[in-house]
Amino acid sequence: MRRSIRVERHLAAPPEAVFEVLADHAHYDRFDGIRRSELARAGSPEPNGVGAVRWIWIGPLRFAEEVTAFEPPARLDYLITEVKGLPFDHEGGSIRLEPDGTGTHALWTSNFEIPIPLLGRPLDRIFSTQLERGFGRTLERSAELGAA
Image (cartoon, rainbow, N blue to C red; front, side, top):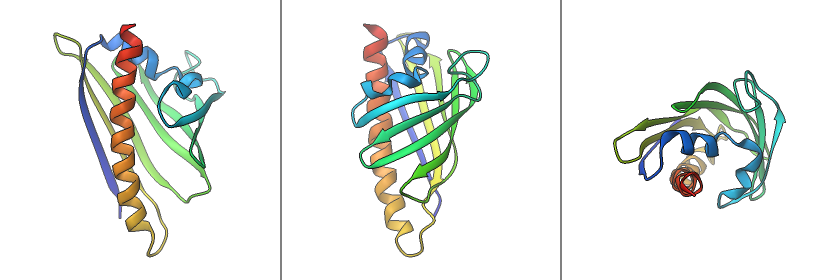
């Protein structure tokens, strides 16, 4: 079953500062739960821009994401192209940032499915819950780092 995640937050930092932290793929290990991250392929026109590929290690999983839209400081879209150790069908994710007068309104969306017969649905639910929490914490931490 396809899952859609939608996480919204008000962040006490300007969009430019939040975007800079979120786009710094090689330093995602600053976020809770991420053991390691690396920029595997540079994008264009900036290293973290369109076409950039980043590998991220969370617990026992390692996955690759490719940046599909890069519009500082408002939009960063990505597609998970590979997950080591788990079948994963990702339709894409998007982070949108807008100034809201006292900081930033952030919206993070992602759509995915774990295509495993019988186990896929319960795993989808578990992953949805964990990803929603993780996205929220990542946005909040990005604001903290961006405001520092």
